[in-house]
Length: 417
Image 1 (tube, one colour):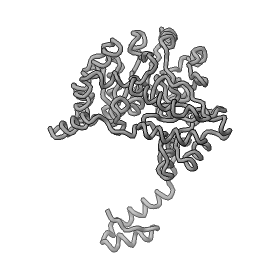
Image 2 (spheres, one colour):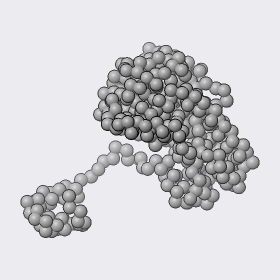
Image 3 (cartoon, rainbow, N blue to C red):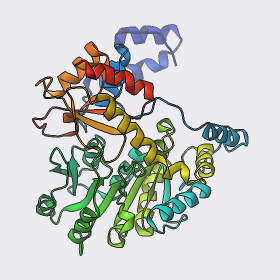
Image 4 (cartoon, rainbow, N blue to C red):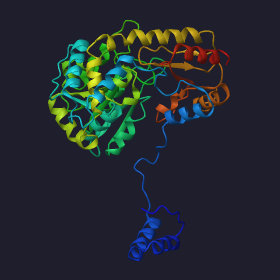
């Protein structure tokens, strides 16, 4: 390929002539004219760069503490790093099996049983994915057809709606009301109709930190009786539930388990968001359809790191103790910001904390978050970006998956507001 920079058809022709490519001139003229006439019709005309990328870039530009995007600023376990090196050096550097290595699928089945007494067959009911976002996209691609409707709950993680729309599906929004961000099941009931293909739930909930109760799952199970509606359950923060509460997984109730694709992620569990390894657990009939898409979308996931995770998670404490680790982080952050004028909302799970800043400013949350980053050197995420219809509220989301000294420095800045 010629790297000479040209700005016109004449320039392209000159370059080809100089390179002895006269026979390619006609084709080049045709291609250039076609490009000039071609118009692109976007499938996602309203979608731009995600707020997470925007705020992280802004934090870097202004040398601000970054409590916006959800990733730790500390490293994973040294043992995990050693195991990763071990399997790379051992030659496991070619394609893994399409559904994932059997070692990791067996470990996932074990985790499902330890946590929920739920049985999933590692051969036919578990698939390893390139993170939870890919898992959710694949599930929607496998089951949502043009004209189908999918109910999601806002504030909603930003990948949900675009993934539905890319399948030709229609998004129906049910709003979680602040400050408790609980599901209004009467509203859900009204939205269900013959076109409803799936309901996408998320607990522990990003961005609010709320969790579903056993009563919530019971209502969902009853609501879907005698329907063909699927449940896609985003449970990536499953091991981060605080204050003695128990994570209510769809795997706990047979009526839900039979119609659900359960999505989770190791990135959150072992502090390796950059590894992008997650998984889906679902009954064989659903998993068979899921894999039809997965094999063409991703095919296989990082081989040595799958084996690394399988060995690391033999020790159940490496996931069961996570809730204590993050509750300590949450409690420290809340203690540090208690002298401030910010009002914290209750975070029952995840590693996010919502803060009401209405006693400080009545600016909209995006403007306030940007000013906070530029002027006060602290980056957060405005809650309104998780809504289709932006509500009148003054809430920012802060990630407390950070070193203690990072949280101390951030809290010092917040206490000065």
